[in-house]
Image (cartoon, rainbow, N blue to C red):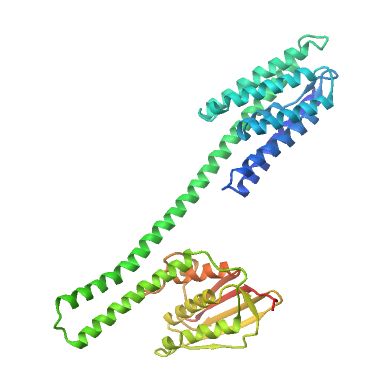
Length: 416
């Protein structure tokens, strides 16, 4: 009796491990239905084979195991094709094992296959409790059929202890596996809904913020145009002032849309590449008109020659956004250093601005988060996205009233 219990426990342990492996496989690619089907087929086949390999024998040729549990769930969750493959596999293994009970075992597998396929549409329409009761009822019926049919090959017609143990293990296995499947499926759906709700929340925030950032300058521009239309006798100086105001507001709209598109659109061709020193020089030159009206100085020190795979314009966009943030924090200097290894280059951008508090630093790069009243909250988000798509990493360190360091780590290429 001890050996019977040990073998049934091994069967049950293998079934539970199969469920865990199936779930890991499914989670690895949640957006495709095919890995789910493949996982059910492969794990059910392996588990069923192991269960049949660890059968125990009351008499020679009659095999007792928990093969029907992976067989039942494999058909229900894997579909008729998976069930057909499992049926053929079970028949082949049983023929190899041989013995007087092989005809009964094969007949039960075939009957259970047709019954599971027939009940499959009903199974997924009923409640979890009804699924559990259906699985237990089907398993008990087939356990009795198997035991009664095989009892004719033994000297004693009825072995109460073995019957009770075999039926209880099968029922316990069905209940445990059914509950695990339902729990895993419910948790899986909850995680998917949570991810979806987070995406919708970010999208709604994005829409609201872009609407806000675009609507205000458009309202100002419309007011200016309306004023020019209603009062054609305005002084030339005022006309020029109002027209410049409208142009500035339109430029603000253009900046918001550009940042939004830079964040949202797919990124760069893999074969693009650029020289780092050229990219840094171009970034500094773009800001010359801006820093000419401030006390900020930008200097680059010892930028070594190296080639970075990616798009030059996007990298410049990211670096200029970092420079702009430093200028907005009232920095008197911005310094750029670079170190190159065999596979990466590390770019350090350091300023002496007012810095960022720890709590603000945690939110840096989040959508629409800005430390400046003039910021859109899209700049650093775009920087993070660009560096990520260049295959790099960004790290920001800051001390309040001392300054900020931005460290960019990017892959380099040795191709000419």
